[in-house]
Every structure is written in structure tokens, then in C-alpha cells.
Length: 112
Length: 117
Image 1 (cartoon, chains in turn blue, cyan):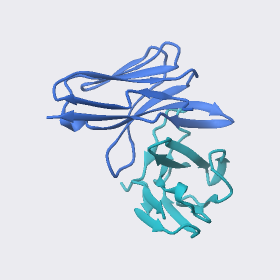
Image 2 (tube, chains in turn purple, brown):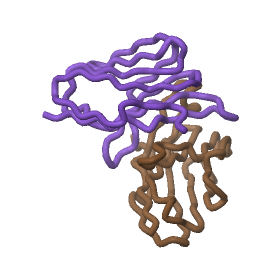
Image 3 (tube, rainbow over the protein chains, first blue to last red):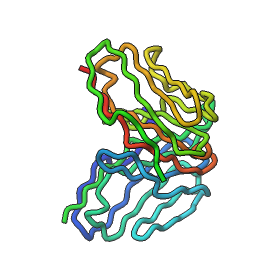
């Protein structure tokens, strides 16, 4: 079982539409990071949220950390083909040692 | 600035052979992580080092896997003997502080795609 569940796993929409991707867990995280990964490359950090209820914006992307620090969402407004990629959430947790655990990702395709 | 460098980019080997993956972290980063990515399981943490010392290896699948960091600029992940189920993309990442708790981003290499036939 995954510590972090992302939904949906796959999403294909038209350019200009809005979308939301979710990252859920029953565990509390010290922080939550969002990464984007393109084919043949490693994940690249988009944002880190630390405080429960925190909202951060990155151009057309809005990230929110749940009040209880167990979940997070990523909302994209007016999606563009350049937003296509694998979106990964990752939570900071202590399991014997400090570590960052990843969800399985949401594979997003924006069609022109 | 050079990012995290991994080699080789692709590796195809036969079952039973030894495989060695290599990583050069970003200069000055004191944490190094090895992750494995598959469609079924996503990104899994295998092991990570702090100042060249292994901190957590609880993600290493079994004794066939071993990792070393002889100095601050080099790490290896070895699989001996390799099996078809080891086929995956293996990523190395580095950071200035443990990701998550200290809110530091992980800087990933472009991975090594391993295929074991």
C-alpha cells in the first residue's frame, strides 16, 4: 500500500480547461513537495508547502496543504500543452529516519 | 552549474550478471539518495547517505543490492546477481538537507534505465 495516494492516476484534457490533482494520506507530514517529471528526465521541484492550510501560487498553478497536513492539492488554471507531464507529490516523514516518500503520480496530458 | 550526473543512461544485462550504477552529486550537497521508479510502485527510496555515511537502507530490497559512497563526489549502487524484476529506472538525487523535514528540494539526475533479460 502507498503511504501517499494520488488521484487521478491519469488525466487527459483539452487546452484551456482547469484541473485539480489530489494527494491524500492518513499520515501527518512535516512538509509536502510537488514535483513534475518529463520523459527521460528526473523529477524537478515545483513547490514546498509546510504549514497546514498553506496556499502557494506558481503562475497558473495553485498548491494547497491540508489543515491537518495529511493531504494536498494542485490546481491548474487554463491548462496548456506545456503542462503535460507526471506530477508527483512527496511528503516529509520520520520512519526510523527522516525521509521523503513519493506518491505514484498523476500523468497529465493536455491536448492542443 | 552541473547537476546530478548518473551513468550509464541505459543498461541492458542478462539475469545473473552484476550491475553497477554510478552517481556524482552536486558539489556541496551533503545528502545523497538512491530511488527506484517503476510503473507499479512509483518512486521508492532505496537508501540515503549523509556526509558519505548510510543513514537509512530500509528500502534496499534484499542482499543482492548494495550501495557505497567512498567520498563526497561519488556513489555506486550495485546489484549482484541481477534479476528481471530489478528492471526499472534508478535515480540518484542530492540535497543540502534531508528532504521534507528541512524543506530542501531533491535534485535528481536523469536516471539509469536498467533492463535485465
